[in-house]
Amino acid sequence: MNMGVKGAEKALREEGFRITAQRALILDIVQQSDEHLDAEAIYFQARRHDPKLSLSTVYRTLSILKDMGLVEQRYFARDHSREYYESSAVPEHYHFTCVSCGKIVEFETPLIEQLKHDLMVEHGVRFSHACICFEGYCAQCRADALDR
Amino acid sequence: MNMGVKGAEKALREEGFRITAQRALILDIVQQSDEHLDAEAIYFQARRHDPKLSLSTVYRTLSILKDMGLVEQRYFARDHSREYYESSAVPEHYHFTCVSCGKIVEFETPLIEQLKHDLMVEHGVRFSHACICFEGYCAQCRADALDR
DNA sequence: ATTACTGCAAAGGCTTTGCATTGTA
DNA sequence: TACAATGCAAAGCCTTTGCAGTAAT
Image 1 (cartoon, rainbow over the protein chains, first blue to last red):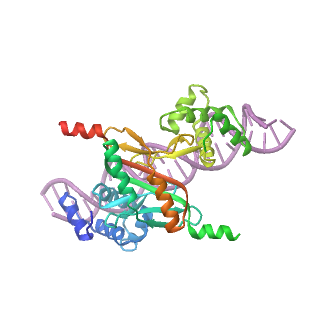
Image 2: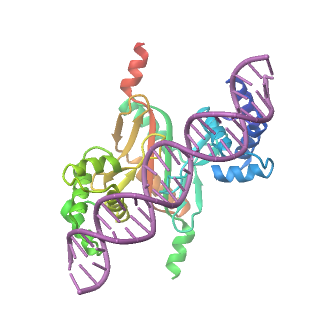
């Protein structure tokens, strides 16, 4: 699913959803951001443009965008109590979170695709979604630990 | 971390934790079970032996066991609001959840180990934990869908 | 003019925590 | 005998929902 804000709005319209100012705003924030935002971060950013926007609307909009595959939910490190959101328009990649400094390392790999393929052949399953998050120590924090 | 209930109790004692009847019971349930239990399921099972056990104690014990690496937390499918627990004593494996029937397919693969190795070489990161959950349609449900 | 969407406030669901009591070491 | 652990109830935290008012088509 790789389309800009306009393409996403078209997709929403085709599903019978209305394009409200709030939805356009939220969509824009998620698609433009190169960070991983949670609902609250999106909310705060959106309020700069629309101070009356409610957190409920953020959640409701994100829910629709997720269902339509326009936005992906992500979890980082071991704490999955909070969801982060990322545009589906970005190329497929995975995340490694440093438990020491919190930095997120993004990486690409063909191995996950291969794994999906293998599982399909071996178990006959058909993937629709994969949640993958790694945690550990980043290069910097490992080096810092050795210095001490 | 591959040890029986006794080994786990020894590990707890060495960390200064007391072995209470409640902890022994919870530990036993998690290590004996071949299912994926959430806190409530462990609680209900434990109450059959100790009707006065509280849910708080289940959570508190699981928290300790997680911290010590004796138990792994798991998430299934896209809903990560609920945690499941699994003994760390079982061989490394991963999970695929069927979104149609809910069945969980467990599988092993050398690809994740390879991925860890690749990332270490390419990004200098050191893994401590990986959370991987796949979802989609199992072979049975795919076949059933074709029949209709 | 419909009726989907929003904002507000309240509720939900899982997990954590404060505190007096109990029980392990 | 200390003080860690428990049980109970209350609180926390993120997310969802009910409802009356608002706005997109």
